[in-house]
Length: 233
Image 1 (cartoon, rainbow, N blue to C red):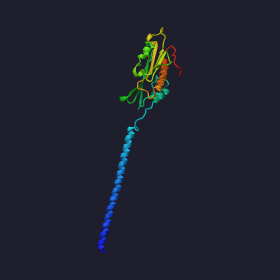
Image 2: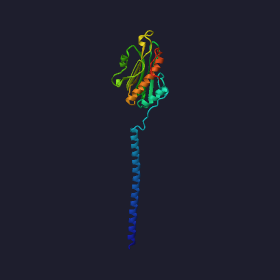
Image 3: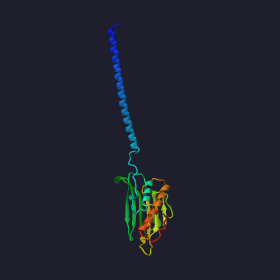
Image 4: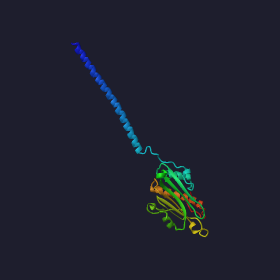
């Protein structure tokens, strides 16, 4: 057998083997690169989906008793109620209104959700005197449209009504013979400016509880002389 031929054959075998080895190495590197790229795409896609689903949202803001308006009674209990029924938002803020005095009295608390630039009006507490009859006073407190939905009477004060968006209590504050007529009667309302994040039945029950508690505080702060006739609590 020709040695040169044999040598040539060996050289061909070595060359082919080297090409196969290099091809195999390149294929392996390509697979690794593709795996890394695919993993990165999957991770990025997963992060995008998670972010879209709110995984990185700020979540529900906390409400402490000290955040609640000072003229709203049982602030710890009120904060607990707010945390459970208010629409979810990243933060909550409270704005009190108190105008004490025997010649004129007003007390209120506004509850907002979200940052200042795009905050939402969630809840309003308000008490003020009226010279109107109870039905007229009630109808004057935006009891129409969605606020009047499911509005039914319940036992509190002189007259009381409640629905899933609003609760109203009217109570006599002072005797007509001793004070100005407009100070004889006090209107107390709690209005869900944005629907509460619970069922309508639960919302009505919550608003009843809040308005009766607030009415007790108003009766005290306004120095009312006539018994409040409110449920115990």
